[in-house]
Amino acid sequence: MKRPLTVNDGDQTVVIDLKDPYIAGFWAWLWPGAGHLYQGRTSKGILLMVCILSAYFFGLFVGGGHVVYASWTKEDRRLQYLCQVGVGLPALPALAQSYRVFVAGEEPFFHRFMAPPRQPVIPDSMDQKSQWHEALGYRWEMGELYTMVAGLLNILAIFDAISGPMGIEEKKKKTKSEGGKRKAKHGGAEEEIGIAKEGGA
Amino acid sequence: MWSRLLDVANLPLAALWGARVWYFLPLLVVISFVYAATRHELAGPILAQAWHTAVWIVGFMVVVFVALLALTLWV
Image: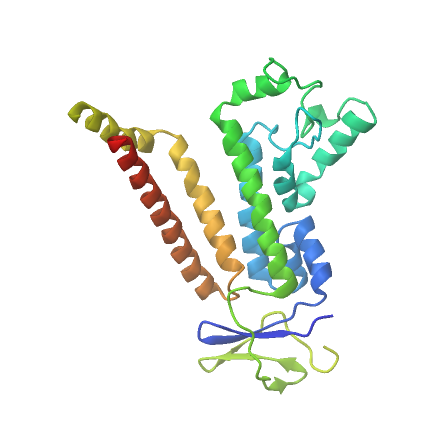
């Protein structure tokens, strides 16, 4: 359990209760924004969720649902998936499909959604991957770009859930506590973000 | 020389009206907001930082674009 952070953001002082940062980090990976919601940083959690998931699903849509798949064969190493899996749960069906194809040797389920292309993938031949490229054209790259950027952005969000905002310094001076809660003051008004309890924290 | 210059000058216009260039806009918004949200906690500073980041990214892209354009003219 990490102690609450007191930080200066602009001209205001904010107290952030990170709760258990590693549980928050796990939630943040599993579903973008969920870690912040767990910490009570609701607005930020919703902002991150909307931004990251909209980029991810837009990319998936533009890429015809084929741009996110997991494959580690000699002919088709999907390094892109290492970035895409940063969004957590929305990218995990690709792992299940990959397991079915490469390990269990069965047909993928859900109409081959996020499944690897039909094997074998042979470079310079008209295999299924080439057909996808031909059908989608530049949309393939756009879809990959969007889904990869979404995954990478969520890694920033995970760090934020674990250790708080990166750009602002932690205030060392202890703030006054009132009624078992810490409150942040700004311009006469008070604001609480991720309410921190005194004593046990 | 002049015909080449005109060809190059037509490029940005053609690209601007083409559909592909607009794909950068949602990405710009998303990157700016997420980056800003990981550096600030309050809505005001997040918005200000997002705007600053967006301007910086567009400025950087414009500089690269102009450099590449100049390169196509003189190389």
